[in-house]
Length: 173
Image (cartoon, rainbow, N blue to C red):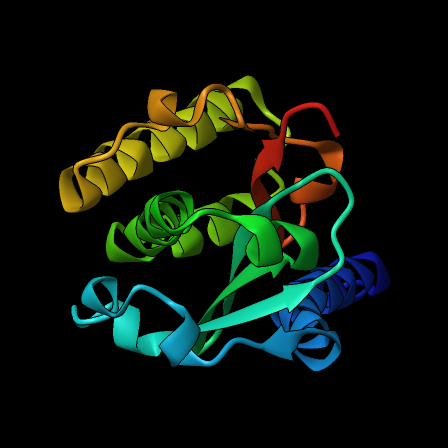
């Protein structure tokens, strides 16, 4: 293999390694949420048992889900988690768990690592993931996103083109 080939292979290996290690930094900085502070009825399925929940200060987003192989992680904004009503928290937890149930976290990671995360096709795929997670959250909780009066809306900010993918934001912040 030529020097350019080795350089390209080395760069690709560093990119994959960064995208695998970066989520662990979030877990090191965040505060783990005790399962007793979460809606226990949503934590019973197989996918939910492998999810860890954390809080930390976030700018403009209520939370996001990340894949930190072999763990699945949900991070909530501290202020959001502290002031969210029980129904809102149930809906958001169900929404985040749906991403793991459907494997969105792995698919999103592969799109980002494969340098496809910024394409229009990926944007449509991410929007489809959000709609699927909303439908599952509605099915599991009996609540709808519209019940929260526009408090929640989806965003796909530029920073989500990393393994740490934001899934929502607080309106008005």
